[in-house]
Image (cartoon, helix red, strand yellow):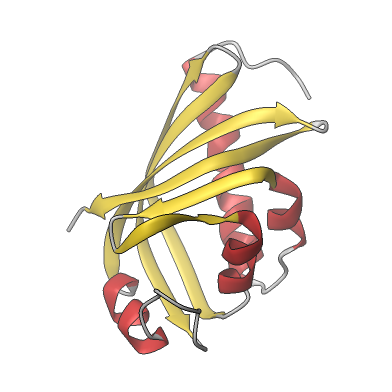
Length: 144
């Protein structure tokens, strides 16, 4: 793992990480996500008020996705001490297959909330266990 010294390098790195994340979801192979989400990973969303979703629950939700297509319009990243802060602007197509648990919208409601929409995400990454891992991921807002 080489040192990241510029925002250009950070953006190139995070662009690859986000692409691998999208591939992991679209190919229904969560191995990459399991390795690149930190054990203390938290996901929050403006669409789902309430407590943050931890890594295990996030992976369980990811396993319930079908017809995933994430088209990135732009990725930006900045170095902030030992971490990288990133933003992603993307078009989302996702279909949720099953009940996602208490306090979560029904699958068809969640599909309607995100599919066919342009969304902005913000994430924080740190080097850990020989790879960059996302430890904070937030669905910020619609961009359409």
